[in-house]
Every structure is written in structure tokens, then in C-alpha cells.
Amino acid sequence: MLTLKLINEETQKVIQGLEKKHFTGAADAIAAVQATDRQRREAQQQLDAILAQSKQKAAEIGSLMKQGLREQAESAKAAVAELKEKAKALETAMDVAQKRLTEQLCQIPNIPYDEVPEGLAAEDNLVVKYCPKPDPSRQSGEEPNITVGEFAAKYQSLLPTVAEGAGDDAPLPHWELAKKYNLIDFDLGVKITGAGFPVYIGKGAQLQRALINFFLDEARRAGYTEIMPPTVVNAASGYGTGQLPDKEGQMYHAEVDDYYLIPTAEVPVTNIYRDVILDERDLPVKNCAYTQCFRREAGSYGKDVRGLNRLHEFSKVEIVRIDTPSHSRESHKEMLAHVEGLLMKLELPYRILRLCGGDQSFTSAICYDFEVYSEAQKRWLEVSSVSNFDTYQANRLKCRFRPEGSKKPELCHTLNGSALALPRIVAALLENNQRADGIHIPTALQPYTGFAVID
Image 1: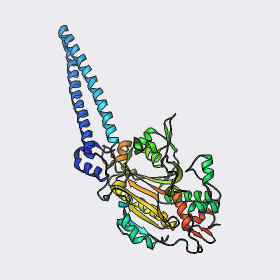
Image 2: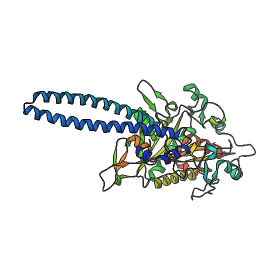
Image 3: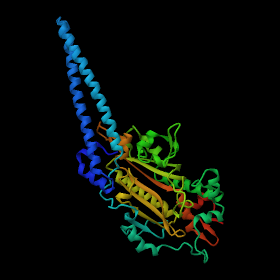
Image 4: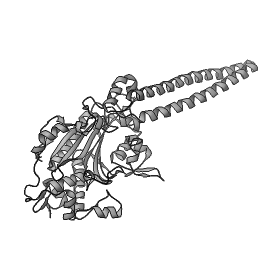
């Protein structure tokens, strides 16, 4: 959540940032926070004064008793008792104000960085890089710096035709390829659980496992320490990373134990550092984790959610960083380069978007999405979001670091990104690599699959 220091010292900047995110009633929300904060501080000042007065009166009682002034001592005792009652009332008022203040702050999203573009929805996002024909041996790509709408008109015709070599037939979507090659059974998933819970079979399961191992190995080579966290968390963990109270309807909730199935490994991994003070020399912390992820809000009908496009349960490798404010932007760049490197090695056409204010998540200060192109579906599929949350999550988590040479801890910056989410990567690999003799596996992935073609 936003810090009171930021809200009180840079009020107009905060309001403008919230308006950039299209947060309704930004000025009123900030005014309400400041009013509650004033009430809390005024109660604190009154309490401090009463406690000081009570301490002074208590000291007088002993002196009066020694002087034999019993009546005055009893009067002083009565005054102390009255002050204690006032102190209790002020403590209660402070607790109420603090609870209301926390509730108010939790309803206010993070503010975006200056470089986040203006805009209301996905079509206003900025395309900052475009790579229609990835070469795994180099990092390249045009940098159009245009909106998604402008991009569609200018670059769509430059995308490769993935059906080359596949004969005269149009490329098949991945759900038909999955059936043709017996890779994924969507109907069996419905039988066992319900829509959005596919069953991977044979080479489909091997491809899934190969991608997980490939992503984890690439993260390890980039200096990330692997974590194997729980996939079920308590409410405090959901609160710490901002899923609660904002997204409780999007998570599966085990009500008896008050546990939540994780929507991403970001939640348990980042919460490792809840209520922790790190040393500056140990930053940045770099963790990665493979987990199953669960999303209640996933759709259940229509082409946009068909097959692997949107699932209730899916596999994902996540990278998480805890860093200093002075270095977090550099960390963000390194994370973006890491995700881009994965897509280059998988030889998938991709583009990178800088999300506009209106399309950003509740908690992020800046976010870049990676999308891969599916020729069979004629659409872009989001496969990663890489975000810097500034101090927003750290303030909730009480995740701090102690700068070298200083005794006073400061809030860390937290960052995370998908590296990568598997369902749409699998969809793009199947659709973009179909040929007359089968589905070809990218060279970098073949040591992990143990086969070069699915036939």
C-alpha cells in the first residue's frame, strides 16, 4: 500500500497517479486517508500529554504521603484514575482510527511511474519491441514505440506464415492439434474436475515437463535460487502481496481453514520476506519457483478462452526479486531481458508492451507484458507480465533492508514476472511449429523433450 509519508508529502503527485490509473474518486480517497491520519495523530498527541500528566501525578502521590498530606494524596489518586480512563478512551479511538486508516489504504492502488503511458484499456498499451522472426543466437527486434492499435495496422502483415511446409491446409488451432496427436484431453479434464482443468497425455505431458525444467534451468543460470513453496497460503500472505482484499473473488478459497490456492508463485515466494529486515549487501534477492497456479475467474466459453487460452489451473515458473530502491529499475531491465531471452530460444514471434495506466494491475508501478503470436488463431497471446511494485507490496509486508552504515531500516522494492506461464506457450509452440510431418520442437528445447518432432 502507499505510504503515509508519500501521501502527505506529495499529495498532488499521488492524486495524479491514481487518476492515470483511472481510479475513481482519487482526490476524495486521499482526503479521507489524510483526515483519518490526522484523527489518529491528534489522539496520539492527547494520549502522550495525558500519560505525561498521569506520570507526574503519580510521582506527587508518594511525596504527599510522606508529608502526611493524606487528603491531597487521595485527591491526586482520583485524578490519576480519571486520567487513566481518558487514556483508555484515547487508545480505543486510536485503534479504531488505525484500523480505518489501514482499510482505506488497502482500497487505494499503487501509483504508476512517469513513463507509464496514458490510456484506459489494452488498445492503449505501448508496443516497445517487436520480433516477428526470432533468432535464438542474438537479441534483436524492431522498437516501434506505438500503441497496440497502430501496431496492428502497421506490422500485422509482417508476421511469418507458420503453415509454410505444412501443405495447402490452413494451420490448425492447438485444441485440434492436441486431439490429432493425443497430447491434451480437455473433455477428460471436464469429467474429472470441470472446464479449465486439462489433462496432459504422453508427449503433451513430456512437453509440459520439458518447458518447466528448461525455464528453471535458465533461471538458475541467471542467478536465481529455486524455491519450492506451498501452493496454499493463509490470508496474511494474500494481503501481503495485494491479492487481498482486492482479488478475493479470483482465488479459490478453502473456507474451513481460511486458506487460499495461489494464483501465482509470487504470493508464497514474496511472503518469505514478510516481517524481515535484510542487509543491503544481500540485495538483490533473486528467487524462482515452479508451481501450479489457480484462477477462479478464468472464462468458460468463447474463442478467447478455448483450449489452453485461459485455464483455472495451469503451470508457471515465476521469478521474484527483492531489491533496493536505487537498483530496482536495473533489476526490472534484467528481468525483462531474461524473459525475452526465453522467447528468443523458443523461436516464437513476440512483442513487448508497456501497459498504460488503465490496464495496469492494482499493485504495480510499471508493468511490461510479453505476447507471442498464434498464426492459427490470428491473435496475440499474453505469456508473461513483468512488474516493479516499488514499495507498495513491501509496505504491506513490512519487508525492509538496512542500508550499509545506517541503523534505520528502509522499505525494499519488490518485483516479479512470469518466466514463463506454460499454457499459451504450449499453444503457440504447437500452432506455430506444425508442419506436414508433425510438430517441430525448437532446438533449445529438444534436450529436455528427448524428441525433435511430435508425429
